[in-house]
Amino acid sequence: MSVRQAKVTATVLAGALLLAAGAVQAQKKYDPGVTDTEIMIGQTNPYSGPLASYSTQGRVQAAYYNMINEQGGVNGRKITWISYDDAYSPPKTVEMTRKLVESDEVLFIAGPVGTPTNSAIWHYMNEKKVPQLFPATGASKWDDPKGHPWTMGFFISYRAEGRIYAAYILKNKPDARIGVLYQNDDFGKDYMQGVVDGLGDKAASMIKLKVSYETTDATVDSQILQLQAAGCDVLVTIAIPKFGAQAVRKVGQIGWKPLHILNGVASSVGATLKPAGFEYAQGIITDNSFKDPTDPQWQNDAGYKQWASFMDKYYPNGDRSDNQTVYGYSIAQLTVQVLKQCGDDLTRENVMKQAASLHDLALPMLLPGIEINTSATNFAPIRQAQMRRFEGERYVPFGPVLTGAIG
Picture 1 (cartoon, rainbow, N blue to C red):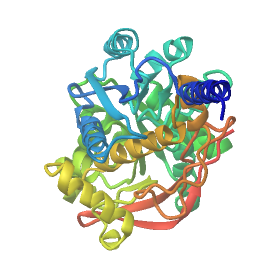
Picture 2: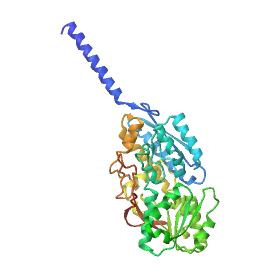
Picture 3: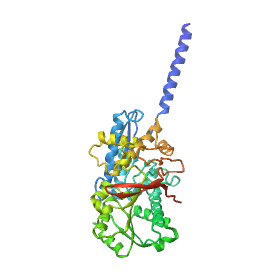
């Protein structure tokens, strides 16, 4: 080979190497919060205030991301997790979320807790085009890919749950005199609308009384007495765990014996029924989309064993009777799945694209037959649940997996 040929070959090789390096570099697309070694994710959580029992979700998620980091991270990048206390106060949520987005510059937020709190940042996150993924709330409005394309829900919607409760009442107690206790905000009203929709043209005659409470109230004792005095023989309680526990306890203490339907949010054995007293919780009806860790039927289940192993090593002091540990674990798993699908294209736009590209995903702690599915027109990952009844010290599931269709 001549010197000239060698020079030409070297030049060609050098050019090829530069092109290859450029191609590799071009494949990496980052938005704020991402480097070659780090992905920053944020969240607000009620570590104090009336919904403090839900703070377990944030602690479990922190533990899960620690596990992922120990295992090498996601596609070689470690997760930096920032979770601020908002005390279940919407103004505080706005303040902390603005800090996450504008000061900390996280890539997105994942698993923020609460309907009124998430509602307070809903428009802001969409105006900023920062993903608001998997909020720990079942408000039906999170499924709005056209109007709010940067927000995606997680749980079965409250309205769908309300329809499921209504269908159960119509089938099992068609002459019911229904009383409803509900939280006076978007959360409570969404559930309420589902119950009304499910009862259809019978709603007006079957619902005898609806009474609300504020999260600043000391107790709901007076509301329970009102509902009993109205002659209601079915009580639908739509509450967060603190007030759900108060309702269950008061109903038991006064010797009232309605068919008691307790919304999924307030149905935790550890956070609601144990504080209320198991003796007052017997026969309570509710629903769930997830395996109940107190149910012995799951002890040999592979998904349960995976969750239990995680709890043993990374969250050993957690209350295993509290469903919040299951919810936080599942939200973190789904968040990691989205990051895995993103590869090296860690832009906010691609995060939403991948979140909307989840197909037949069976998370370990979801009930058999319930899978995660999303698309560009479906921002409601979970759409099904199963009824269950409290007996002894645990829930006993019954009936098929149900879909409370809304529309």
